Length: 539
Image 1 (cartoon, rainbow, N blue to C red):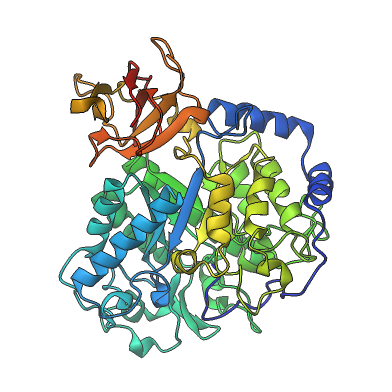
Image 2 (cartoon, helix red, strand yellow):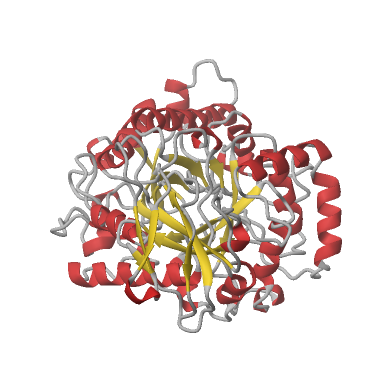
């Protein structure tokens, strides 16, 4: 994550590079990174799942995600010690603004530093809520956030940081009953922060139990990890010699053992989530560079920190082995950046996921546009919009996640509103995972006109209760009679209505008369057949 309180050593340093023309950069990157066969496979899969644009460029499914960070009060809570009423009001305002811009999912940090934004039996209440670690706020923030998010038709991905314990080095500042104090051998101090040691099996098991408590108890839509596994490297090596001696049997190199520790965490968490909640989405947003081509011919044309070597994260391997439902590499660099060019990395990641069942979503920085310390490319309000234009040429890319909510709200130079106007003019359904695509969708909803024919009413399909309940209603508009079976094509998608709180729709004043039909969409993204069409006169 692009955290404001520090920048990890070893990431590419900011320096200006000539911003090459988008067409030339894309041509070079695609030629070197994407082969014909994976691209063709990606097109077929994207088309089957509704992620491939139609002839007019409209896309039906696209992840438009927003990270909401609680760490250090970056986004929410915006200050420590706010009242429950103020915290709830702030969260609702944040959701309403995100939905108005065009976002369709939020990724909310619920376990930022080995603590919890819910009443966890394993870890203390988060200090970012009240200002005091372990202090009960008197309400259940996670339960409230999940309900409020779903009421607005947005998906809620619970974001967990697996191994970070504190962003300060003093264990005495942790609440006395903290697991890191009860088990002092579990944690180490590194780079001025406290981390659980991933090389200790009991640590991994404990972290998984803490995470699964939220997965089982709350109606979340996703389990999300970011880029913090082994920490970003500092001047000294991570202090795990004793753990390697105790638990590294069969490994001659500590780096290989460390990668295996993270592999175990990633795969075992996937297995636990699938067993408990099969339709919960599980994915990771790692640092954007797996390996540089100078280190590995399979790597990207970059000269940056390598997550495989410095954080011991075999992100490419997770994709190839099917351990994650999606990968969301953090590509926080501009087009033309010499050390890590967005125009090289987006096609490289598209090539790695093409032909797999792993979705590819891109982590984007909302904080860099307009930041005074950033180079000239980030002073251009169109930079992020160009990223999404490039993405649209790569069928494997199914959307983006933006870091983070506070920066989106501030939107220093209008870059977020610019990209929304350029690329999000129509609503989009959330992506549908291949492994969930074949289950039964909801039944088609019922439509009928309101009194005076100024709007329409909508209700779930009456049935036996065996089909999933609608989460959203997708409303399609037609200028002429669409017939008995109206097409549910993206160019006609005019609104997504939250099914939990909406039973009617009125077109804006001045809307010409038109035909309408609707589908019901469940939380997995499965869409029903269209309803019978309904004519509404001009508003």
